[in-house]
Length: 121
Image (cartoon, rainbow, N blue to C red):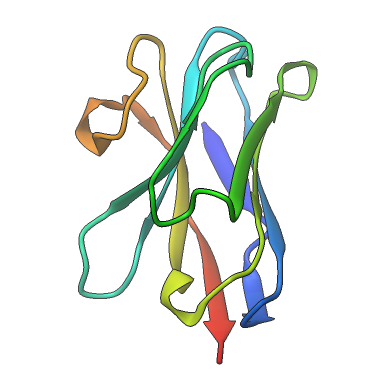
């Protein structure tokens, strides 16, 4: 089970750090990803990280603003979000998969409950 947390209301230009903690299994050898979904829009890829943390991949829309990282001993993945914009307002989800490292959501096996991020202008 994956549980995302850390969302909230922030002003444009502000920062938030999301956390995604796994329970019931170790994430050491799983690829992890973050997606978001705004009302009326499709789920959007944000970032992914390999099992060691040595490789990351970002959507162009968040490159330079968001940073994905992981702490395997804590079974947790993070998404540091800086320079937030009103268009970043969405529900943010973490996801994992044993074999897939990419930006296509349907290829990930496990999804957590989302956390709401609202950015005011």
